[in-house]
Image 1 (tube, helix red, strand yellow):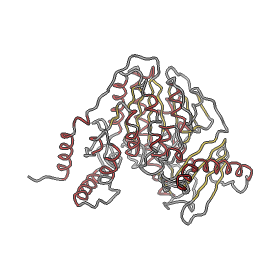
Image 2: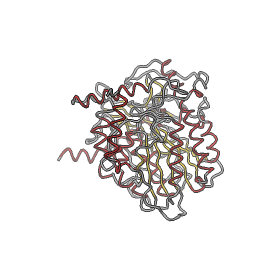
Image 3: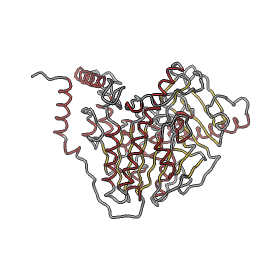
Image 4: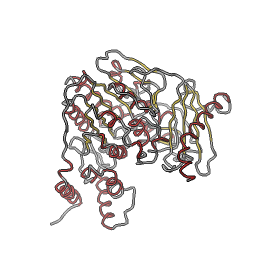
Length: 511
């Protein structure tokens, strides 16, 4: 028998599924009696920056559906992620803690074990049926940590996968974290070089399969979207999410967390969105000493165009999802939250978000909340943080907010607006999660002022930058030397807060 590479992959999938089928069977689990508490749905669009959305005033009409939904939503205009990539941004959303506290600071990292049960799923599970799904494997590691609080962890479904691959984590729901690190990431992602000849053979098979997805497909001139493990179609994925939410509506009440990979790179819009927008002249921002790439301005702007087209593609699916749920009556008693884990940048010689930078493009994220019965738009301009999601969900569910959370109840949903509140973002992927934070980037926003601090980078001097976001939204005029009063007070608060965060780890090292 001549067994081809794709046949081998399919056979491996069948064998794995056959031997472990019981572990992978989905179930809605326990049913609940009807409740007057609102259902809670969080829709996370990965790497969606507020800076490129027409709902926030962007020149290209990238989000006509979000524009339309905003007419009956609370729209947050100064909402910031606590990190600039998935792990810290998502962990902070789900725990209400800053990265320097929960310690999920590395690529694919874990939060500290003492905070594993301090998450929205565990805190709501006694009264809510909890469900979660993500196409992002860094986020799925966190869901694996939070598994005790998740009644239905949606790991694999025909709704989402266009090209099947034998990712083994789905067959070990009780041990998702070691399975991910030991097999799916180490062997199949292509980021490591396995020492075993057999594992190297498997990795080679997977990389060849992945390369097939880069070719144009019907309706997808750049190839199908993929998350580096499998490819998918957004219309199929969002239709699957809609069906999952309709199923969850049998529970009363329910919490559903859906973390989609799009519009994360690779930017692969459908044909109908390609060529949709005219050229847009953006200000040139030269690379700095903390840039890790050096891509030309022209190349970056070409990537921006691809990204904007992809955002428009995803926006169309968001519109269909919310319209479908509204037609089914689910939105009548559902608080529907649309946000992101971090932004995406196209400036200073870099694009994407695996960067040392904390400029607004990579941390200013959207937040729209559609509340049951809301018919008019409400705009919140006071600064808010991704940390605020956890306490707000608890408040909406009528539950107390535990002491120690760094977030606050969102204004417009029971909280108070505070225009001078301090908003921190932490980038520390190059720092150990087990020691004090001595290498990384920190930003602090107070009102219209934003301080950025670079520290501990090899052969780079410790640096501070200060910007006025109202007068200089593109962050091109550094005021650190000119506005010494603002710079001094914000620097003192930042360094004092960092010292407080480091104190437990300094004590541990001295023992």
